[in-house]
Length: 79
Image 1 (tube, helix red, strand yellow):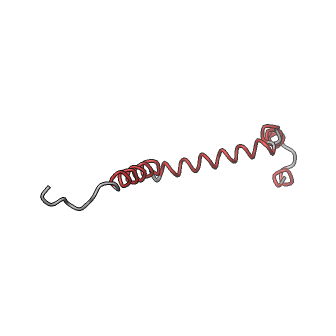
Image 2 (cartoon, rainbow, N blue to C red):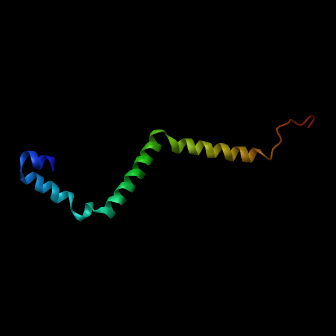
């Protein structure tokens, strides 16, 4: 609107407004696009900090600790 006030009518403004008000950019699809953007940003952040390999290492560590829980850590004398 500011450009319209300063420069008057321009066909470029008309084309931009026509595109901006297409049904594909409506309220419901916009929510879906926003949700997908959040999911992609979360995934990119997780990959950037190498979260998947850290999570795998943590799970592996817990599995080893659980498996070793049944074994005695004290040495058997004479045996």
